[in-house]
Amino acid sequence: MTGEVTGVAAPVQVAGWRRAVSILGSLQGYVGLVLVVAFGIVTRGDTFLSQANLTNAVGAFASRGILAVGETLVILTAGIDLSVGSMLGLASMVSAMLLVNQDLPPVVILPLCMLCGAAMGLVNGIGSTWLRIQPFVMTLATLSVFRGIDRQLSDNVSVGTQVAGPNGALTGHSNTFQLFGTPGHNLFAGTLGAGVYYPVLAFVLVCVLCQLLLSQTRFGRHVYAVGGNETAARLSGVNTDRVKIAVFVLCGLLAGFAGPIDAAYSASADPLAGTSYELDAIAAAVIGGASLAGGRGSVVGTFVGALILTLLDNVLGLNAVSDNLQLIIKGCIVVVAVVLQRPDLLRSLAHFVRRITARTGRSS
Image (cartoon, rainbow, N blue to C red; front, side, top):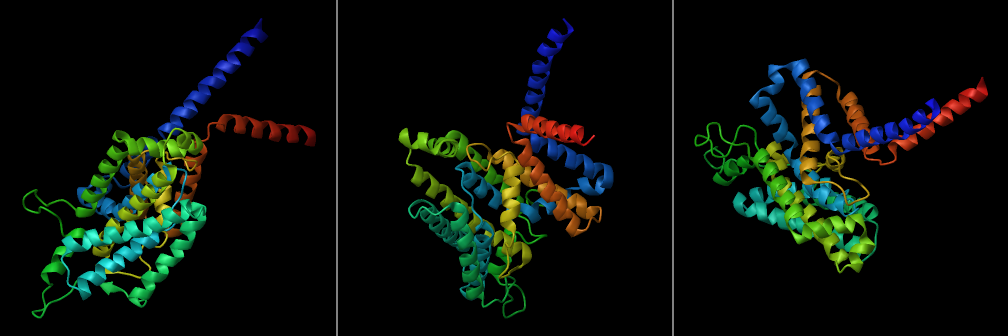
């Protein structure tokens, strides 16, 4: 009788654990965000929670957060874009050169950079679809190509965005360009108190618009369909190549949008700007619940993932943790996030335990 009860209870217990792990996997971003905030409050208290600290932290990560949103669109179709950092760097350099050499107003520079980014995304999309090159290989190649173009344009020299006029003061266009992200220069200052930090506003607006695109439009449903099962999506009438090209173009467009923000934040465009940003972008998407196999994830989740990386960098910096250790911690967090997404996690753990137990029994 006892054996029967145990036999019935065991599957029920396993099913309960599976549900718990599934729920944890779906909420991993929110759980991680709570843990990071709690760690910041416990260790640094008021300093961590101050408006100035949080605004500066999110503002510093905003350009990478925008890249993460574009990366999410590509990942949802089971693709990957390793060139987003180089696209941001090239767009950053283009924005600085248009400002310094052509004296164009920022309101013209921004759409031109977005157009430049969209063109780079189109190259990635065409290569990944019409030429049938794996997205990983295609974007790995363009990562190098776009970086080379960036360095060729700039002759490997940084271009400052704070241009002084004949009277020694900043030119009007240069002064306006600072509103794109230079610390201390906020939009609507006076009207809304201290104003709104443009990178934070831009990041939030990009997240809202892209989430609406995915959740409220036919295109969004097609994106999930292609990532979930490309063959079934094609047979149901979805132009899968067009969807893939579109997400690469949108990813590039957002990289072009983030370029001037990065240049304004640094007050210059560096030939190496955006280096390794693709790693943070992919990490934010994965931590937020996006599956690299495609078909699962959301912009809201990526926003949460970006906040986790942002606040983690901030709280570790406040606690004087070395940069090397920060890299190790972030890498471990990404591994944990991917593992939690596995539907066969419990089965794999049980198999591993059985193997270790069997080996131990043979050894003894």
